[in-house]
Image 1 (cartoon, rainbow, N blue to C red):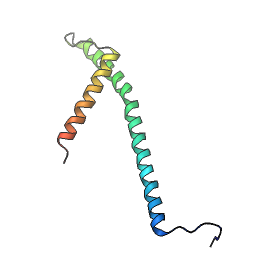
Image 2 (tube, rainbow, N blue to C red):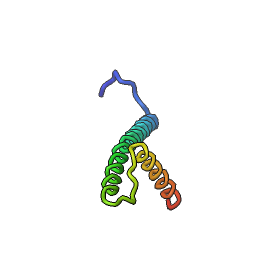
Image 3 (cartoon, rainbow, N blue to C red):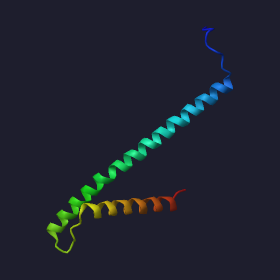
Image 4 (cartoon, rainbow, N blue to C red):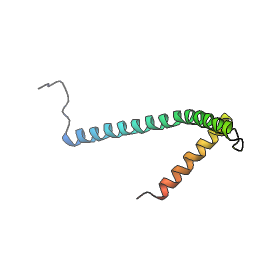
Length: 89
């Protein structure tokens, strides 16, 4: 037993453990949000390429630029978020 360390009550130890767990969960949520935000440009680039390929095959489909595809991806993400909220149990 180390007598140089101060003694901590069990309630205080539980409280500190809960605080550490909350901080870890918050860090994981922040990392997930950063990851999702980093995926938006990649999704937009892929959408732009797909729309360009479809435009090459069918002239009736318009070709869209990168900015437009970013807005489409953001709009689709917003719609998916609202729909998920509506059908949440």
